[in-house]
Length: 187
Image (cartoon, rainbow, N blue to C red; front, side, top):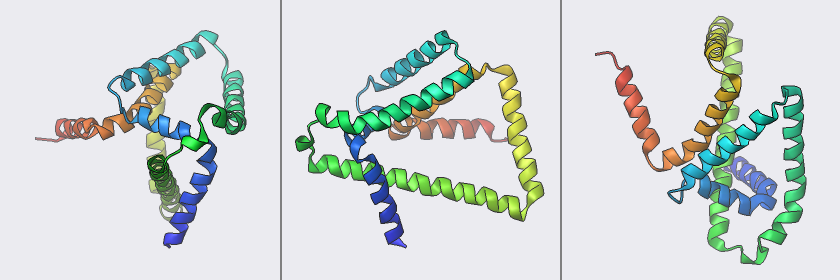
């Protein structure tokens, strides 16, 4: 069983090898290693969404362009990264940090796979419960969507997801969850 996890981590590490410097920089940014990083995240996210908002593209145009940008980055980074980041300056501590990040990604992937398996298992074992839960989630999302602009909701969701690692590292996420739970308790 442990070999499966190591193979998975090794596979993640192999896939991310050309991106390793960028992965480390992204981890530092998302975990708020410097006090101004939350502002950088919020500012960059807002700037990108403002550009997309001003371009006013249809979804049929926007999604293929975003996918094309991802494909260009995936193809170009292995060629450009060694020219920007000197591979000879890669150190042991950086390698250890990269290994930890790959382990976290592998673990998250396994957990996501487990959640998907659990959902499929629930659908097979209890189709009525699955239908009720799915309809509740979908109708709730539809209700929220009727009040919020989809673009605003995408910006807010993206910003929230990008802020979670820093909030978690600094203990703020635990405080927010405790506050929310204390407000929802029935007295």
